[in-house]
Image (cartoon, rainbow, N blue to C red; front, side, top):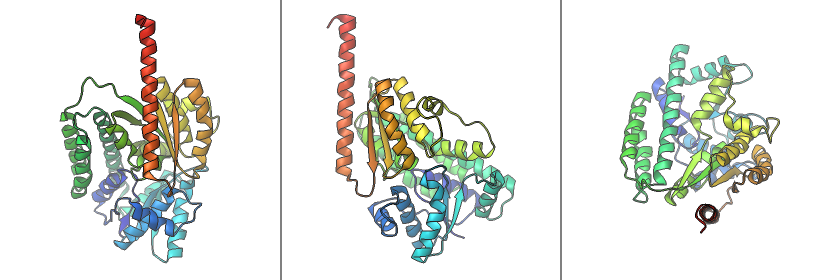
Length: 371
């Protein structure tokens, strides 16, 4: 068995950590590029969403490197992610390649079935070792998300443009040479120390923008044209609450153990959404409310064309925007989306919220000082 997995941001590092601890044989597929999307689009229909097309591209590129088993995540509700496993099996069969698909989610059979699937990937390790590896992978995911959060804060305040990107790119390539969860965590901590030492403008008051939407397009840089890096280098501090570690802890572990998972954003969303519609729709609406209450300058909503939960969210966001007086821009991504047009829209949105903040400050000064 030679295992692979799709690229979703830094999940390749979490997956690598998990498989390293078992000594499993695996293939890290090439990072997503136009070639990946073209390959995936060749074997899918126009009705398929961008994430699925990239999943197929990852699968085919990894298969060329010898992979015969693919690990993916699961989903629920109208979100098509819940069907990706069967869709990938069908696509592989139609293409004529051998690829076993293992979905890491809590199925109807309960957490024991999930543990059995993980055990299969581990090469038959006992349940205690499986539990240890899952916990280690969870810790890696948490530390990765913390590192991403730190890089977003530093990027908006860096004295030398591109300095954070240089460190972060070195981390993403260097981590491939590190093996095992312990060494990976050590490498993450070393990178964190390097980032913390980076000189910044302590007096900076950057614009603050929240990124909300479907998990794949908000996390995977190729799917969103590296919007976090773009905004950060424009001096904008970015927050993204939907994370890989959040999915592992809430949607995989807590759900499997029947523990409460309700968060602040889900509670805030209930004023607008009385029932679950699948995907991350509740998080999209709820986090927009949270960001507004925390004084953010704006919110950017991103999702792939045809994503049903996010279509519902988009219909609700104008009410949130009106009630909480926060600018919201929605961007829908598919294979026809041009990077230049995407960037132009983002730049225009930043100009808008910058002007809005300046006008607000001028009004405050008039009230306080009469000018």
